[in-house]
Image (cartoon, rainbow over all chains, first blue to last red):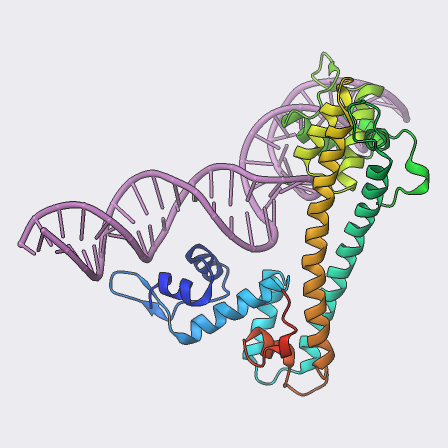
Length: 138
Length: 138
DNA sequence: TGTAAGGCTTCCCATCATGGGAAGGTCAAG
DNA sequence: CTTGACCTTCCCATGATGGGAAGCCTTACA
């Protein structure tokens, strides 16, 4: 299987497959005489694993950890769960951060006429004037 | 005021102040004979504006737009509100995306023993096996 | 069998916002 | 006058991805 076929089979772009190889995540089974990368079902499975992990927001570093755990038959499920839990906490922290921004922005937007006049509480807040009555969350 | 003082006064690092200058966001009032950047209260105000906009999640490009609107006394509040609304929608989309990840991850974590055994629904999901009973959101 | 299209290779560059650090000039205090 | 703290510019790194060029290879078709 060429890199193009491995790409369609896994949903990972050829560009990314080469990059993952470069950072040591996944190597092709070998090369043809003409230096083409060759992949098998095994490699495609790994690529799908990576893709799924990425879609759940894991970084490539975390994905590498998970990949190693997956391939280590003597892992403990506790070690996997720990990676997941840390990631969940990270996501929740970032969600809370963004929700704070949304809350502030919605308040400011609500207070903004949104008409032809120049007066704008949003700009006033950014400029540090009339600090939106304690609604400045972020 | 030197860049260091402008930095403490605004909360923006000297490194970033120089970068903002490079991309055309904010220029120093001038330079001393020895080529040091010189800032005044006006510039610090702009830096604070930028910092506040960044803390609300606006990109530097959006921040530039807001900055121009702020300085344009003939702007309409509608134009400002539009920038804010677009950003709110963007934030909410990203929040929803991450919440989907969290939902899936929590389900998988809940199903994972987290003990000394190797069996792990989290890895199974990533590997594409036992697709977590329709909980695969992301 | 020749050729054209398309796939593969490597290499470099860009993104976005930020920080690190080196090499060298400047200023202020002791 | 020296020392330390500041400033200058320049280059590099991050994380994950895409774009594109130059050149080789393969396949399909005439």
